[in-house]
Image (cartoon, rainbow, N blue to C red; front, side, top):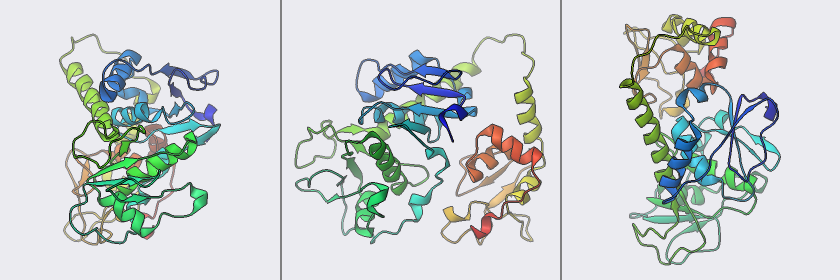
Length: 333
């Protein structure tokens, strides 16, 4: 992907300018703590959930200052956002969930309240190294600390590109139902650590949840909004509606799934299941939607299913559903 392939660029005031011809929105931090400041930036930007149906990229500033707003943006979007940093496009939205499959050395004995990834050794808590991709894979021992620590503080490298790459990897390693964001070190943390000491860094998971909560507030407000005359659907909306009207079993088959004798379908995301979903977990509902009890929090239609399975934007998913005869063999992945 090139920067000019995106439809919307979101940036901080000290980030590179958006490329010509692309809509660009600035996120200007507001007042209050990190979460309140980030949500204030989202409110002032007038971004809406529909903006994230197209290709979106975050233009990051130098250093690690963009991580807080990026965390809020991921929460608001409900997914990772591609990032342009240090002159390169990092396609985080297409990474999938590979971090879940990286082996660890087992759960540490006892309850691990705090761990630290990166930076000099911290007194009283395990500290592990997470280098750049060129440094090789993370050791199983380091994965155990990152994955099982109740709270993890991340000390990012100075390079913005390495910092964002490390952040996304750490969030993947800590993933449960979704990515779990770490604390971001401010360089002034007290030692030893205390469970809820607010000086222990910036809780990026709290920032992510604040962004998600703001998205929910907008949804609630829209439900109670004044009814206005309907606007004719655009050609793009009609295409998404057409794709969502395609028979969901047809889409499941195209994604490499198949039903068993009871009518339940194997999930086309087998790597998210401990047994690769040998016991089918997906049920097709009468409203042309389906749901996997492991992967989906609610019923999903054809477009949302293809978006999640293949890592596509909604527009790309519609193209896959309507214009392609290719079947994806996900169960051999």
